[in-house]
Image: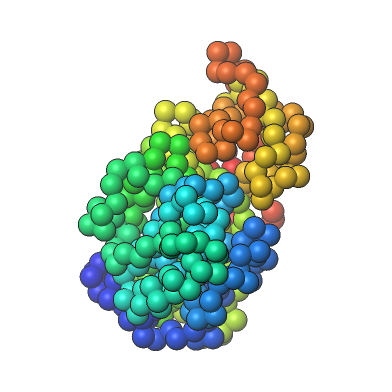
Length: 351
């Protein structure tokens, strides 16, 4: 297996020198074909062309209700998602983009002034830092300092994923959210695939087995994550198909909250009911927490204790009314969606 240093060097070379635009990618892993959410699509037309052309993401990991938040984008590259978040957090918010590839950061930095002007801000609410996602302290990020961490097809590239996720939950404020898109596998990736520099650079070699991801979060005290979206990654190149073998890869968008004292390892029923107030600007008619929790204004929805905590102990609290508490327990709560045939399990504690 490659050492952490050699892996980072290979990734830096691939994204800094080999890839010059999206056209150089060999698979769909790092380039989403998903429809962008309306609140993201509305901002996309205001992003500078060079920033868009050098974007290598696998999803749209920018959640709603960001006004005034401090957002950290891990592996920000040329800053596409940083600038989208910049518009959404508004002039009272802040967005920090972190990346280890100097060539990518150089593109991002030179658009700060032009993007602030396009958004009508008197000054930029964005800063970029050179650093590593496994050591956010070295980049000056303090404990409990960030409202939302986003990342777009980058965490799979880390040679030390336990350190990267530990750092994420360290810097998140209590009730803060990790919202990211990345590549996952239906089994553990074998050495021949993991050590292939092209497959690693294309976000396949470092893909996490979904159950190992669940265990990793569990060990960090996050017992329930939610799947927002999922698609199978197509590998059209026959040579790459042969190198990958029978592994199925998925692009998944996932959200997880820093609620260690409020979330249990399975969904429990306390008879709680959630009412959406319809006040999230990007979702006046319906708010989707994940792939099986959809809330309409005023409509009562029976929820498990974990879902109630996610809606009442996070930045979503002003937008929901939760009826009931945890004083009476009714047993396990079944809120898992039926898995599609042939698809990888999307199971977190409640998913």
